[in-house]
Each structure stands twice: as C-alpha cells, then as structure tokens.
Image (cartoon, rainbow, N blue to C red):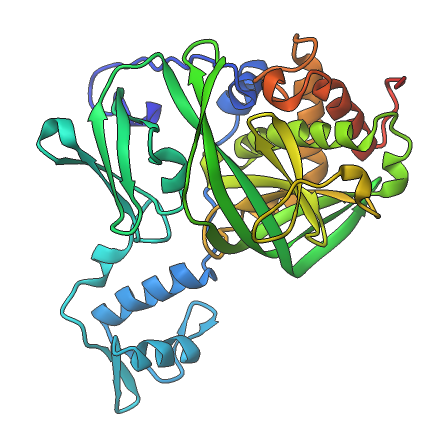
Length: 407
C-alpha cells in the first residue's frame, strides 16, 4: 500500500507501527530486510491445475487450441478433453473452440484461486454487499459472532449461511476482535523431495488437509489479552495442497529434559513462530500459509482448546488421548500452502529450512519476555508458561546447538 501512494506529483509518508507479533517484531529488529532488499518475490505455481485450467479457458476464448499445441511446457490433451466432455469446448477439424456465452476471465479471481466466495451483507445499511471473502477464509473470519473488520470499521456477524455462501453483519463498535480456534489433520499423499538436516528429516510434497473450526477467542485490542471464548459449529473443510514439513528424531528428543506434553506445547509455540517468520521469508500474508503439528503417519495431531493444547487421534470424531500412550513419538511440524493445489511456497521453505529455523531462534532469543508472548511463541495463557524455554531447546536441537544447559 505504501508503494501506491505519491505516484503523482505530491509527497507521501508511510508509517509502519510494529505490533506484538513475530512478523512485525522481526521487521523492527531487521530493518535491512525490509529496506535493503528488492520486494519482488512473487510466487505462483503455473502447474497448479486450478490455475492452469482457468488460463486454458481464457486462452481458448481468444483463439481455438490446435491439436498437439502446448501451453508453455504443458501438454494440454487431457485438459482439453476434460473441457470438451463438460461442454466448455467443442472439437472440430482438429481444433478446440470456446462454446460458452460467458466471458471466462470474469470468473478468474485475482486474489485467490477459487471463485467460490462468500458474500458479506451489511444489514445495518439496507442489505448492502459489503465485501467478498474467500471460501477457505470464511470459517475463520465470518463465522457466527465473529468481529469482521472492513475499511477500518467493525462488523458483528449475526449469521453465517454456509449453504448459500452469505454472512449477515451489522456495524458495531467493540474493544476486541475474534480469533478462530481450529484443528488441522494432515495426511501425506506424495513426497517430492527429502533431506537429512542434523536432528530432523526435512521434506515437502502433496498433502490432504482436513480443517475444522471449533471455537473462537475474544482478543482485546492493544493488549492482545484473551477475554472470552465461544463455540462454532461448521462442517469440516478439506484441501488438497502442497506442504513443507520436518520430523524430529526420537533420539534427539530423548536428550531434551522435558516430558512429551511439554514438548508438544513447545512445538506449538515453535510452529507459531516459524509460520510468522515464513511469511516474512515468502513475503506473503500469514493467511496464505497454515501450520499443523502431529505425527508423520497421521495417527495423532495437536489442537488448541479453551483449556490449552490437546492431543487427538486422527479420527472423524477426535477424542483426547494421552500423549504417553503413543508408541513411537515422532512429532512433525507442517507448514502448508493454504490454497488448493499449492502455489510454490512449500518448495521455498524446504530449500530455506536452515535459514528459517535460524531466524526463528534469533527472534526468540531477542525477545525480552521471560516465559513467552505474542512476539515470539504466542500468549502464555494459550501455549503454556514454559513454552518459550522448550521452544528454544527444540530449535537449538534442530540446529544441533548446545548453547544452553537444560535442567
């Protein structure tokens, strides 16, 4: 937004106020990253099937495809046949012609992959359409009783009509915003690449993600205090995407003087920090990527509840289990592209694994808090009072450092 100001003859001033988040604090402590580097780091995966099919539709509208023709390096025979079978293209004389009355570019969103968006309706202004929200973001931003922020104003969500893709809101001034709580289950479908990195195995590939929003927290403006909870009843959301993940070696964890429950708390705090640092590295919004903590074989996963962090089985109706009942404890942190098919983030994180972990350790060591805070591992009333110490131990173990002695 700063780059859009002052493009005519006048001068402009952009002010960045650092909030108590790892992303903001990283920039405040590393201003050269923001001011000395080129901002051009746009990521897109042209092989993403959702993106590719949309481009083929737009191209076919302009000119018919000829048999054997490629789109870049892509062989289009299967895609053209699929579009022909669905009545979108018509094949005649070795060419595929556009057959629809609509203009395909109108259905290609510029800010998301899916066009299946939710409409936000302002009831306090004659049912005016206020905004559109991506399908993947709707459960966490416009659920019932959420505070939706738009153009500097606050709107209370009275009802989310999930079936008809509408959220009904009214303008309301509050001293808090809402933060959704969810659980995420990941099943690995394919491993593209892997490498050993000191005390962990680092990989990236295709995954199947199941996410369900179960509640929300009320967070006070200014202080980030948790001042209340609420429940959310929404269906599970499934996503086929790409992810980067690393699994800690059991032998390395045995040398850390914390029990399994404390290690899981530390992993949650570590993943919170890594997600925020990753968004700086990728130059993306934190909503463009997501995190999950669990077992590589998808037998258990960690989720936040009103009473803290819980360990759950990979089941339709997850029941809390004892962390000590897990036979082989190989915790894995996943950071995945929060878009269908993936858009290339996971490969960058895989390549930059050591840099990412080093920057996370630097951020947590530079944080002045004693036990943990939103600027490093997250609020201690959510992740536990000892999480910062455990997270430091985990990060140093990943980097094979021994600068601190654990009791």
